[in-house]
Amino acid sequence: MDIHSPHPASGRHGSGRVDPPHSSRPAVAGGAGWVRGAPSSRAVVPRSVAKGEPARDDPRCTVRARRRGVRVILAAGLALLAAACSQPEVPIDRFYRLAVPPPTPRFDRPPLAGTPEVPRFFADGLAGGRPIAYVDREDGALLEYRYHHWNDPPPILIRDQLIDYLRAANAATRVVVPELRVQLDHVLVGRLIRFEHVRSAPEKAVVVLEIGIRRADSADLVHLATYRAEAPFAGGIDAVPAAMSRALSEVFARFLADLAKA
Image (cartoon, rainbow, N blue to C red; front, side, top):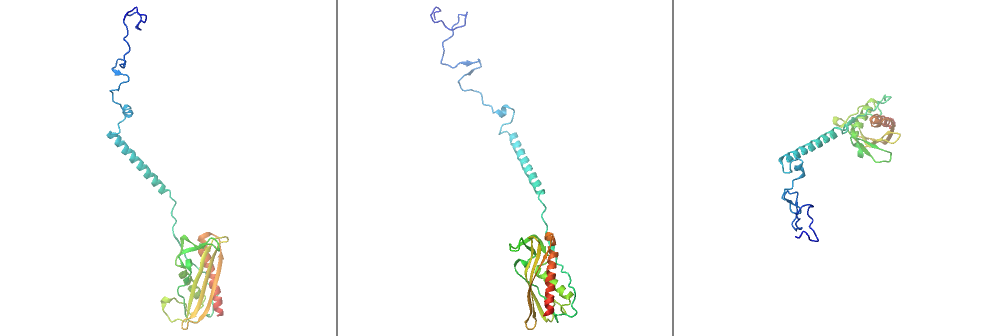
């Protein structure tokens, strides 16, 4: 090219070298052999490897994952164990007896001559079950306590208490149970209608008992009546047995009074 050309080349000042014209070939960066705009020949290195961490397919990575899984399982097991140990104590079953006070005074002469037999009483519905029955109010639903029970079914408990009461009162010559299989003069039959704890204020024990007496030889009815008694109390479920015993004592006393008139 003529150095006197009106369009001088853009070379370095003071040198006679002329820059070659622009080429369509990509330029070389820094002389390192890497062509800008061309695909790189270097492999892509994962960031974790660049930081010195093992790759995912490295056996060390598998071991670490297993260790983390074991830690998670152990932590979950310890949490469950701690939760189980913190549970409230399960309530225990409690069983109660009846203790009807003895009668006062005693009969000088038995109002019921001969030997009456007292078989197991009948019972209506929940009144015959061992779980103690209760209602939240007089006209409420009849329910049962889950952990509070009578020592025996109420028909047996009340029958046994009545036998002891009649013997202590000298109400008959002898008072026996069916298992003795002796010669009888009368049969005393009972039906338990209500035997429950009313929890509405004031708390009370309610007993409704039907008692009948028939002759053993002719089945003639000598006496039949229904007795109801209530015994107010305070103290919750633990005071129910004593209140029931007082209510039964009132029922037995009224029965003896009727027996003396029969």
